[in-house]
Length: 131
Image (cartoon, rainbow, N blue to C red):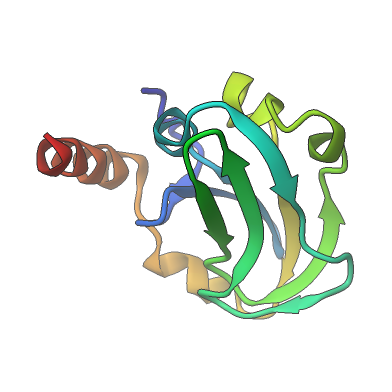
């Protein structure tokens, strides 16, 4: 399982890359691995206002349907339209494929996210629970 050290993480298995007041949002390697083969991605609407903790996208695999939650509030500035035609890109390169870029209303919200080290520990605990 890959956990890049330049990202922040949620307990819902999303990653966030912060660039100034912009937050780039995607799903983690752990998430795509547990979902299995991803066959559909429903992206958020451009210019939509989103709130911390809100479901902003849906990822559907052959095994399950999972919501993608934003850990920050703000405005959706960009979406990764290539996922509409090629959702499997999330399986191949989960850290290269973002779901949305959000202009943050309150950048301090990222202080609640996990560091890479905390996220690795969180995933180890989840694996133990799953057996």
